[in-house]
Structure formats: C-alpha cells, structure tokens
Length: 559
Ligand code: FBP
Image 1 (cartoon, rainbow, N blue to C red):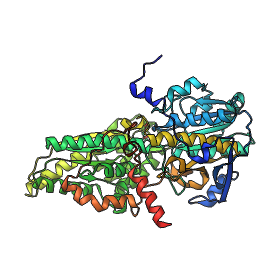
Image 2: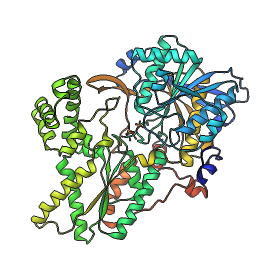
Image 3: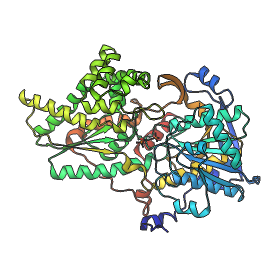
Image 4: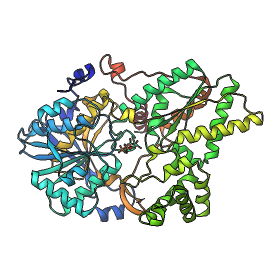
C-alpha cells in the first residue's frame, strides 16, 4: 500500500459537485435536441468524410422524475495526449454514472493511450481502484499516449478488442487531435454497424479546445493557477533581488491562452502573444527590438530586472518563420525515406534542407542559431505538429536581446546591465491536484459522457456549460464533434481536424491585457496569487480563471 500525503488523504474524501440537471441521477434524465449543426468550415468535405455522423443536433439534459432503469453495459475509456489536471475525475464520474445506471455494468480502461485499444491492453476498474484516484492529478491510473487512430487496420483491431470485451461504448478523453480521432472512430463504427458508440471529453491545459458550445477544456484552470503561483514567486524574487530579467516560456502549444491567463493573474512586465505577433506580421527582429526597448527604458528608471512571458508556440507565429516551417514540414515529409538525408551529418542535413527550401525560407532557416535549427528538425508528433515544447525560444530571445542591447549601448541608447535567467513552465502544471473547479467540472464531464451514451448518441463531445455560475447551475449536454471540424494540412496532406481556438485579438481577454500592458511594463504592479486552495472560504477555493470570467461576461453583455 502506497503512503499518501496529508493533502491526498483529504482530497480523496472530496465529493465533486454535479449540475442539478445531472444530480437527479443517471436514470432520471430527459434529452432535448436543438437544431441540426454544420462544421465550422469546409462543410462539403467534412460531410463527405463523415456521412453518418455529420450534422447532428446539439443536445442538453434535464432531470425528470419518470426515469428508466438501464441495462448493464461494458464501456471502455482512453486518456489521450498530454496530461491535464482532472483526468482521473472524468473517469470517476463516468464510473459512478455507469454503476448508478446498472451496478452490473463494467468500465475498462485502455492502457497507455489510444494504442491500448488497438493492442488490447486494458484493466477493469473496481471501486477500490477508482476510490484511490479520486480528485488526484495525473493520468497514471491508466497512462496516456499520442498514437493517432486513423487507419482501417487500427479500427479493425479496436473493433475486435471491443467485441472480445463486450464493449458497446468508448470514451476518449483528449484535446483537439484526440477528439478528431474520436470523430473518425465514431464514424467508422457506425459505417460498419459495429454497435459501438464513441464520446469525447474536452481535455487540454492549452485551453484551445473551445467554441460557442465548449467554454473551456478541463485542466486549464488548475494548470494556469499553478503557473501563476510559480510566476508570482519569481516576480517577488525579481523584485527583491532586482538583478535579473526572467524569461519564462509557458506551455500551451500554438495558442497563447495560457500565457494570457497567467499574465492577467500576475501582471508581469512583458507578455508576448503569438496571435498578435502574427497579426502585426512582426519579424523576429521586431520582437527583439520591442523587448529591448522596454528593458532599456526600465534600465533608465534604475530597474535592471523584470519578467517576460514567452508563449511556447511563438516561433510558429512569426510570419517569416511560419512560412518556413510549413515548407520545412513538407520537405521533411519528402525526405523521410531518403537515405542521403537520414544518414547525413548534422551540417550536411542543414545544407540539404536549405537546398530544397525556396530562397526566402532558406535565408530564414540559415539565420537561426544551430540550437533552434536542430530543434526544428526533430520528429513531428504523431499528429504532424512541431514539438514546440522542445524549441528553446526563451534562450533564443535572451541571446538576440543581449546582442541588441550591446548594439544599443554602443549607440548610447542603453545604459543598463542585462543578466537573464530562463525558465520553461509546462510539465509542472499538468499533473497538479485539480482545483475545486476542475475536480467538479471533470467529474461532471465524465458523468455526462455516460448520459450521452445512455441516449444512444455517438460522435459527440461531452459538454458542460455556464461554468461561471455555481456548479448546480451548469448546463449539461453534448456537441457533435463534426461541428468543430475543418480541413488542415498535416504531414503534407489535407486532413479533417478539430479547429484549434486561438486567442481572439478583438476578444475581452486580450483587450484586458492590451489596456494594461504599458503600465505593467514599467510600474511593477505585480500580483502574487499564491497556491491553489482546496479548503477554506469560497473566495479563495472557488475562484475561476480570468479568461472564463471575461469571456462569459462578454457573452452575457452581447445577449
Ligand atoms: P495536448 O494538446 O495533448 O493536451 O497536450 C498539451 C501539451 O501540454 C502542450 O501544451 C505541449 O506542447 C505538449 O503537450 C507537450 O507534449 P509532450 O507531453 O508530448 O512533451
């Protein structure tokens, strides 16, 4: 028996809150259907690819007193992609709903992510197992993985594994790419009359799986609060020692939701927003100039310290680099089986790449330091994404800003001392104990996922809305996965994928930063949020993110 921390022991006892529409019990639900839906873009192509699951209505639940008993069912669950706080509670909510519907039902957990359903690696959950993981962070209950489910062979194998276990429903807990997998699997099962439903759950700390129907993915709340705590601590250290500039890269992949949220929670001196860099068509040189000018002006004020937040995906949003990466992706796909390239030494590899890129892209590639070139050539993830967590943009900027400040010094435009520390916060936040918000939200998503199955739905994402209100007022239902899809180029080919939600520059969250950042650059209005609180007054335990607060307030004003 593993020894538990005092916090874990107490958290195991926490009873997550359910929306009142679900709290009446899984056997007392009524389903309401909205209008038919269509995909966000590329409607004809998406409809053609998802003939059986396209265009379904949005649905919502409410509690009724005249419910029906359910038959016993076997369901499988997969944790997919990067860890996000609350995954264990999604499984606990699903398990509780399933057992409440019929105690003879069984829940199987596929091990190591989507590959578990293909290779037939699984466990059967028991009360004891589930109870040991309630309200804990991490995905270690069954593990996770990034295998992409897309081939006929994989689907056939998954079907066989499900048949062997008598499984008639699969819940995939994942981000945009994993829920794209869920949509494809759902469509394939219907097309082949497999009798297996597939329901997705919106997971990712990145916060980019959201739209009109999905207010936020789970994990964003806890992860951003964890980073905000760490950054608050660094702000205080910087403000005490007054000798370092801290360059902090923050996880979040392409979108800057994490960086923006953490900036609003802590008010650092500089916050770069990838989406703004792209919209303003800023070059790397312009970003360096922008930051160097703030550093120089602060130095004039006698402040040779500060904090700069750098989004993980920045490099992909600098237009010149973005175009180069898009062509580099195609070039790398072409070179995958080219032995002249695969066997070449590093410098020779760089030369082969440069020779295949057009002159502009080749010049951008050549201008980057070796470290960044190496990182850009690393393998893409199974979904074709550049592994931005491995690109050390914070170090690149420190190096380039150091050079720029020296130039400015020679021109008499800078008279300070630049000493920088680099950090990357990402993995630190993905497995934290879920906040009360994420504990409740995740449990509700899991419970709701089984409600969708109970009503025979497939190809849906479990949705719980109205999240700024008390949990009892949350609205439970489902959104067709195809509604969120469009066509994008991956590994050199156009594929159907769930569209990532990037930061909206005319949205209320970015506007809040824009309004304040000039003052924050120089006035040191730092905020120190401290750690997530699990016990105590609601004013500290139930705080939501600034993003959710501002976005939902704006929606209310718009109505
Ligand atoms: P998901 O999109 O799967 O939720 O992953 C989120 C994330 O944490 C990104 O922010 C980050 O870029 C990536 O995972 C890192 O991946 P890995 O865990 O494979 O290093």
